[in-house]
Length: 98
Image (tube, rainbow, N blue to C red; front, side, top):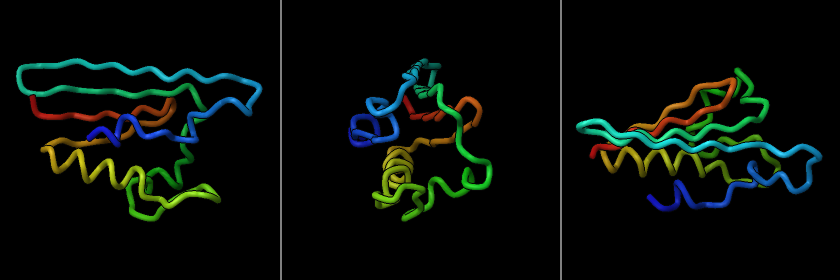
């Protein structure tokens, strides 16, 4: 599970850009689940690739394996959870049993 949250993602590296983005992480719980939301202030994900982002080997980067999000999805599901995404702003929602 650590690799889903702690793995360095070059998408978040703003050191070579003029503008700095903001990543917001929220965590809440109810009686049976923990909900973790990760949101960024970037331009969003193009609508034509949004349905593909959890597919193994899918990438939009020239250097990348396309395994990051598919691996996270598999790990989260192995823990009985789900991961989903909303766009504009981009927000990943992870729901795990508590």
